[in-house]
Image 1 (cartoon, rainbow, N blue to C red):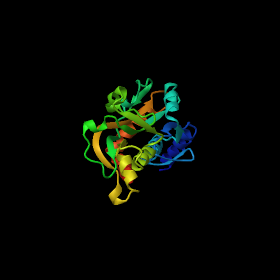
Image 2 (spheres, rainbow, N blue to C red; image 1 turned 90 degrees about the vertical axis):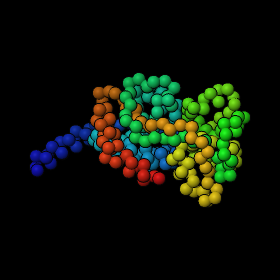
Image 3 (cartoon, rainbow, N blue to C red; image 1 turned 30 degrees about the vertical axis):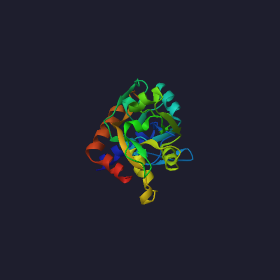
Image 4 (cartoon, rainbow, N blue to C red; image 1 turned 90 degrees about the horizontal axis):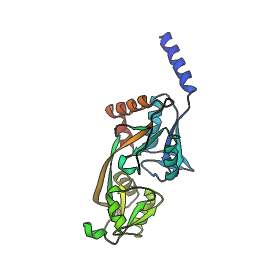
Length: 240
């Protein structure tokens, strides 16, 4: 027992001298994925996931709140260790020097309308302004945006995009199912926004920097273990 305790102390001392893991947090994220207060990440699915992931490999999580474009630049320079909440189709180009983890959730992207919106047909979107989030890529809608059939109306965050829809600024918006459910918590029962059409269901993963100063393989194993032992599902359930 004494030898085990000494080994634990030595291990803790070794980890204490290691730098924190740098996780990127986009300032356009909102609940339930991430709560940002005064420029600091404080709660949410990704906050809990990233803190637990760092803990599992004996590091401290440094959750850096950054504009989306700056995240891209820092990734290109290898100055972000882990980027979670990403899918290959959302990237403008492959991310060199990083490896993909197993998916930790599936995100459904939906066309959303107000509580009294009629059934949505494809022709209904033509000529419409569609509520979107600044910097977000929507691969299944790019053709409509490029042709001018549908106009993007960007908001800084998903929450703001849904607030503008609720206020009648436009008739339709794009939202993840989790963000929609979170927004509707605050709405009266008869005035909740509703999903009209699913446009995507993407498995969401983490990108982990593959370098000697990052415990890359340990992080990949930790995510697999968290998925197998139910920790990932428990984090998601906390915010449903």
